[in-house]
Image (cartoon, rainbow, N blue to C red):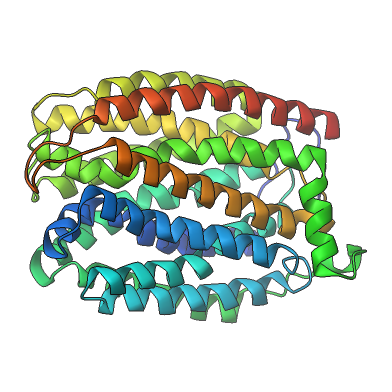
Length: 411
């Protein structure tokens, strides 16, 4: 399954299609749980009396706890059936999200986000290990294009519906919606997914800590870790204050906000499978580099906007996300091809952990850069944030190039 002739398009089996659908839905709930915080940011900051710095801490608390759990889980990630491991962490994620729904103070929400991060942060890593185990290398771009559609779907369906519920029943209802959907997905995984344990036969490290050390000390793996950390920084810096920026600086209303997210997500649903197919057919690094250049241009435009009509905001967001997704899919596909089968769980866990921790630092830094004089005044220094993110994207291009060379040499 590891190697196929380059540019061969292998059709998916019926079971693989079911697995892709379930992983995409699972990822949808994880992404939505995190991303819904940004559009709910204005609700939360006003209802719980949070400052931008406090809100940055709520966002980053998830990231830091997810990062810690990723490191702790890495040594054990290849020691169990991946299906059982996935269900264990997903059930913990559901409990954490329910705690978010029941929180009524800033402190309770902060603790609930930490619990959610402890479990939710590892799920993406386990999913990536499953994809790499069960799909050939020249199928993975298409798989990732479909699984990563969770980001788009969360914007088209999840965030607008969550905001709609928040407008009617309060922000708590958005988290309850995620809990209900996640329970249905968990039950389907229990019934439909077969054991995923082929990697168990390849294990040589008896100690989980030795296994963790071998993954951490591998030079090739370290290059992948650094590339992923830089990849995550940009999104974590811009995302938390996205809705507050649109409302307070661009003067978009709370009722127009779901439309912005919905149309941006619809564009992403069209773009992401195209990027996935393209990255399976042509050089993945070239797709990534092109997406990075487009992202930089659009970030610099977006972070310097003045009040404009909502249709122009939607158009700019669409093109911005085109650049972001054109980076995410090829970079993720390249990085997940770096580890050997026996190390995949550990590699993906460490990778996700570093990604979350780098993102947590980025969210905290964003909270220190961005200021707001009153609850309804415009955010200040958001343009500075755009410059910082653009520089980090340029640095990231270099590290993803090195990952690309490693993968080509391995093939």
